[in-house]
Image (cartoon, rainbow, N blue to C red; front, side, top):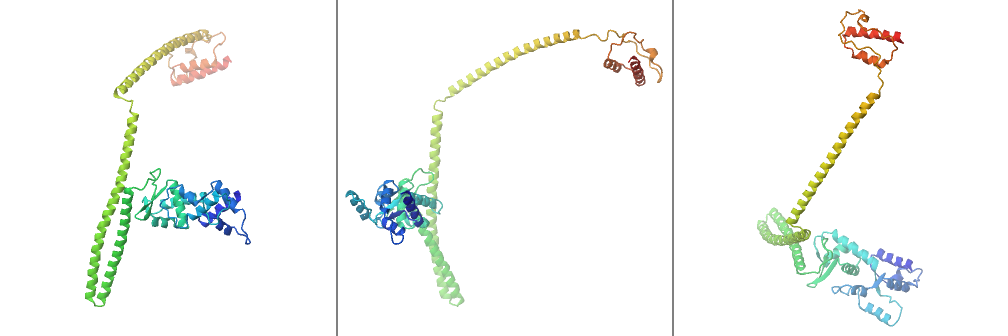
Length: 411
């Protein structure tokens, strides 16, 4: 059953139609002069599952008083099905037409996209002839267009009405959630648009006539027929006056249409202002100046309290730092007392200034006596003592060489 359902649906898409009947299906799926015997059962199953729907039921679910049943949509055919159903017959009439729901929904989406991308997208109301020109590449025939419009009307995308015996179609605009009914303003805009179109066609026709008169006058002048050429120029001048008059009317109509479009924009702006004012009023419902001042005072008090707490904590930490400094000083003094006295065996450092001798003289006589006891000073301490001596450059070099010799003898 699923195989035949998908096959029938694909056949409708390939043929560009949204309706099927048993007679056409028998012709489509005829093989070797034989028709599938189970097609009526397939159609009944598709109807029960909501895959297809009779045209009468499909149109009855929508306000379709505008639709003429004269274009292949006869009420006699649905009545045959109704009588056969009441009598308990399961036979499907050969000419009974069914709407394939999935296909008609796809057609509706395609037609809506075609309108959005057409030159009429800025116009909310179209004539039926203009809609037919748009849907030429989507709907194969007028019956398919009717079913597609019914689906769009069911989806609240279009509204079809009749004005002075002519069908007009109103499309939902992007800023609308659903299409609104056709009102007097829509009718007025439609009449202005139609007048603009007619005046534009008349202006173009008169301009062509004026150009033709000018060309005829040029030809007659070449032939030497000045009187006829003058008549052509007079007629051209008269036509140009008509063109100017029509241009004034056309300009007036276009100005009115521009004002209507501007009024719609102004209305949207005013509505936006009103919505914003209402939202602001609701958001400031419980907000007063006194309450704001009270909150600011409370916040200031809290900030002052926080500053006092921080100051208290900072003073406590500073006292702890002073205690730590005192403890570190005491620890340092204990460490100094525990270090061994490595300089107790050394003689006192002479306080008199050493005499400056000439280069090459012996400095041993000016130095203190060599200690007789064991040398308990390290090489590093001797080097440090040597660096602290304040001698002249020459004397310092000699002192260093002498001390180096003493170190070698001591080792």
